[in-house]
Length: 319
Image (cartoon, rainbow, N blue to C red; front, side, top):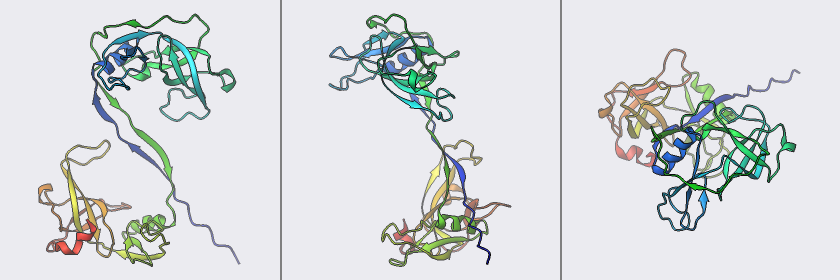
């Protein structure tokens, strides 16, 4: 007898990304503009503590603070951790140490990377200095990294007015997570069924709710779900939102509607985009059906079926 081949393990790279634009107050504006100009600024609190990076409100009294000071570009490592596998977008593409550095004149430590040949070359208490980036734009990355330093220590913090020409007033904060996702048994069956233009969920043997997409277990009863149930293809809009901001890399004109859709036979709603109808005519109870593109492995969007709207009582438990 020949043993059956093991099922293919599905894997896919996924990116969760949320870059957002934020404006800067006078303290953060001065700090980032100073980095662009090769100057490290901190802020002095009411008790005389010099904080680098600077904050806008005293962590003890909560009072607004504006007293800027310039500190040195050299400092002392207070603690560290070795990173032997740098990830994309990290400061260095070769192994390095994450370090907390108390710059000369500062009372708090700044987190950044230290370029060192290996963990044996790093120690708490070692002296380091800023290595400035070749091109500086007004961001924390204007400090390319720290590097070992055996020169003299810097002096005390000195007052600074924080005035620079062409000050940085806003930044785009990048929030991104790259990872490889591998679905389990239940979601693999769900994905494979979608490629056949079918939607398959799993029913809980205890409460009998049909989960779409399936999760492999009922989150309410805590028991495994193995009974597969084909649902839909049509469903009912239970609630929705109108999207007015265009997402990066998404070729859909705004405004458009994103909705919760309870497919016929499902015990909870899934997400889907509504098309084929003006956005201001989408409503709760609207009956919709999936639209597949040529070669698509999942519905591109849902459109009205032309049926009468569903009664509220038919979907109120699925909102």
